[in-house]
Amino acid sequence: MEPDTIAQLPKTALLVLGCPQVPVQTSIALYLVSRLKKASITPVIAGNKAANTLLVVADPDRHYLGEITDLDRAVAQITEKKRDFDQCFVFIHNDAGISYAATMGVISKAKLYVLVYGEHQEDIVQQITFPCIKMVAKAVHNPLPLKKVIDEVAPWAA
Amino acid sequence: MGCVEALNYEILIRDASFKECREYIRSHFPESIDVEPGFKIFEVHTIGVPPIAVGIDGDFVIFPYTKPCHGTFLLRVQDAEEAARLRAQKTGR
Image 1 (cartoon, rainbow over the protein chains, first blue to last red):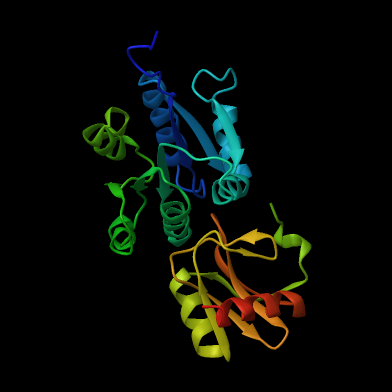
Image 2: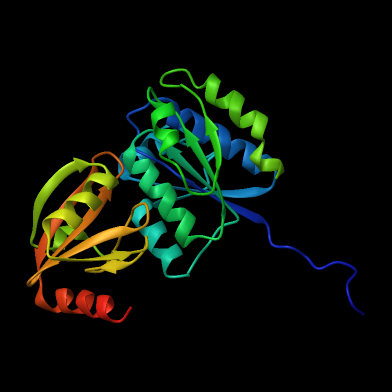
């Protein structure tokens, strides 16, 4: 007998972290991970050693964090078609962040979201000419302006 | 996954933007090719906003290398085999 519905795989999301020099990144990453998990979306964090360590130390019992991987390794796996995600969130506060987001837009089939923050968010967002959903706020130490924008977009409900 | 540290590289520009690197390559080297993000050079996946310019100068390959905290470096590496491979990509288009 044929099943009435075909079981779907759980949705997955990749969070691509930038340089952790802007404090809101760690806070917003934990918040986004929490909201995604509540929506049954499995989040994977990809960052450099410093960005990943900030998260691991902040969540020692892994209440929020799941898999964490090295950013270069994630890029390699996606490029080589060994892995992909349903959603990809790229944290951007500098030129390198734009480069990583553009790269994800080319190598991954994930729906691309960019979180643009820091002191110069307007200058940065003008350079983002590739297709993506932009969540933008002037936010350095206070994560609430960026949280508000994320809540309005509600990517976990997409 | 490749590691750039395994290469004997020279840094031509450091902490640059992806646009600066593209323009520098196109204006300073006799040959260049445009590649897409993820394209492998020396076992390293390139990061950047397409098109990513890669320079070829004799046996030297000049390519951008991006780090989240340090922007984009423009690296020059001498490797006749890799230069020939990239040159073949150019002529194959």
